[in-house]
Image (cartoon, rainbow, N blue to C red; front, side):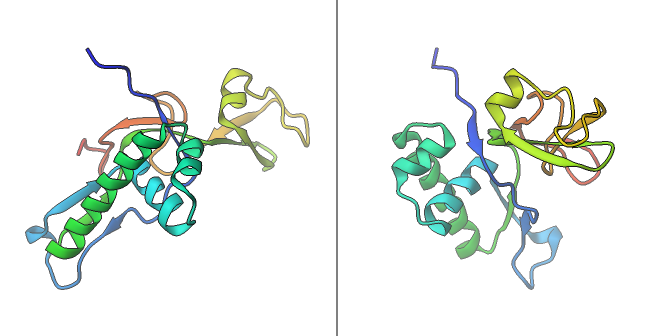
Length: 162
């Protein structure tokens, strides 16, 4: 029996999560599914230009795990680009690096995920109202993986399992 997989820490979930090649109808299109943590690995290494060691630390994983994650992501992206496939970014095994909250008065704030889970806020820091709620990134929310964590394939546009 293998070791239990750790949650990968993600700081950013892209608001656009589907890319399709021009000129190919949806009915004829094949898809490549890129996990959110794979997209985060590409973002940290290729877009932000961080070294793999720092990327791994930010994602709370080992450098070798980060390297495997990045290789898998790049392979999927290359497959989609060179073979005319769509890319869907969804699912995976991750938690958000920060948690965001909003009170009924409209004040928003965020804090480190670990601190917000171990000791969630009871009052808004600005107006002291106890009426607060967590905010979720797209595709996140309370459910199977817990608040702020996500595992599995996710839901499609009409709430059906994909």
